[in-house]
Image (cartoon, rainbow, N blue to C red):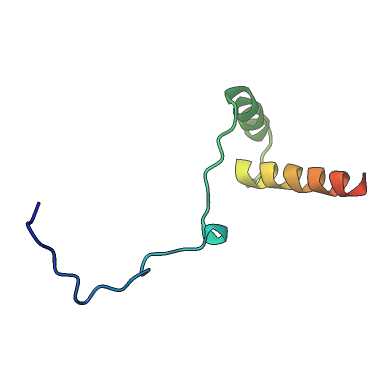
Length: 67
């Protein structure tokens, strides 16, 4: 480690990103993930596990809003 660092040309907040812009990883339980991977392998489609989970969550939000 250097004794001193030169920050004369540094920009404060140069790498800052608002929390809303960050993509956070979401981890599924093994059983849930295995279920959807198994379902995807049975079907001949170009749908990803992300698309399926997101569509299910959106439907759940719709249902919750109706309650």
